[in-house]
Image (cartoon, rainbow, N blue to C red; front, side):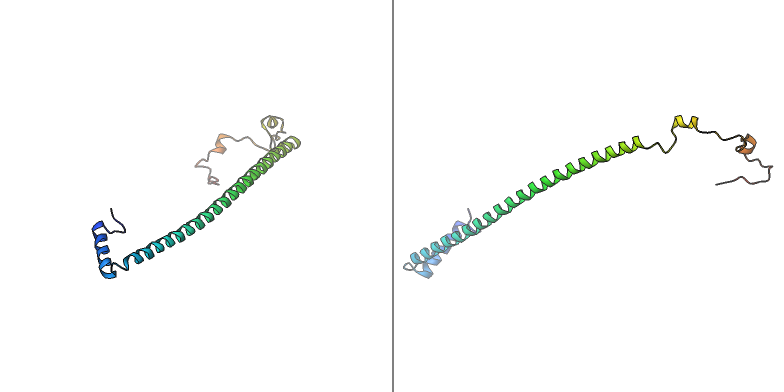
Length: 141
């Protein structure tokens, strides 16, 4: 097992060097100060963690509120869209029933006035196909 990349053997070596350098009479006071510092750092870390947790909880609550508002707005827009579509269908049906058709239907073509024979000449097969001897070039559109 390692602590900050330091194994047991290195940790024992550091403790022995600390005992030699600091001395046995100042080592307990130094251990006390180290423990006090670690507790203080843990207290600060806990305070920061709690502060972030409170902020994250607040943000999550706001996200839920906004999602609810978005859902409500989406429902209102969909309802308005349905109402608009229904109104447009009703208006379209009203227009179809109130106005006569603009284009003749199949039954109306038989009742339509026919053109007199003098206005249109019957097309013969000789007129419809160009012949090479007529001298006129065919009309191309």
